[in-house]
Amino acid sequence: LQDRVHCDRGRLAESQRIVWAEEACSSSLREELEQAQEVLSQRQTALSACEESVANSEGVLQLAESELDSCTQELKAMSSEDVDSLQVEIEKKKQAFARAEQGTADAISQRATLGKQISEVSALLEDNRTAAERATTEAVAEGVAAKKALQRLHVLSEAPPM
Image 1: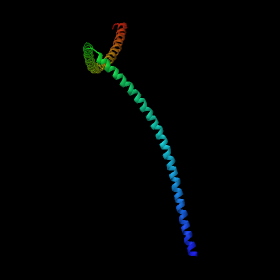
Image 2: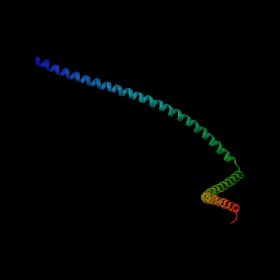
Image 3: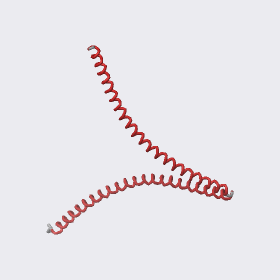
Image 4: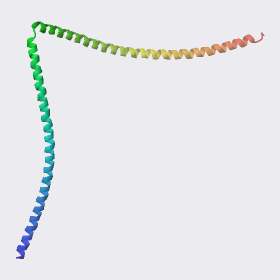
C-alpha cells in the first residue's frame, strides 16, 4: 500500500509539474494571442486605409478615363487642318526648345570662358597691385632722398663762401 501511495504521490507530483508547464505554456500562448490580436488590429487599420486609398484611386481613375474619353472625342472631331496647325505649332516649339538648349550650352561655354578670364584678370590685378606697392615704396624713398638733397642744398646755399 505504501508503495502504491508513494507511486501515486510521484504521479501526482509529475501531474502537477505537467499542469504548471501547461499553465505557463497557456500564459505564453495568451500573451502571443494578445500580441497577434494587436498586430491584427493594426493591420486591419492599415488595410482599411489601403482600401480607402484604392477607392479614391478608382475614383480618380474613373475621372481620368472620362477625361480621356472626352479628349478622344475632341480629337476625332478635329479636322485635318487643326491637326496640321497643331503639328506646325509643335514643330515651332521643338525649334524654340532647340534654340533654348543651344543658348544654354552657349551660356555655359561663356561662363567657363569668363571664369578663366576672371582668373587671369585677378592674377593681373594682383601683379599690378604688387607693382604699384613697389612703385609707391620707391617714390617714397625718392621723395625722402629729394628732401634730403634739398635740405643739403639749402644748407650749402646758406653757408658763407670760402
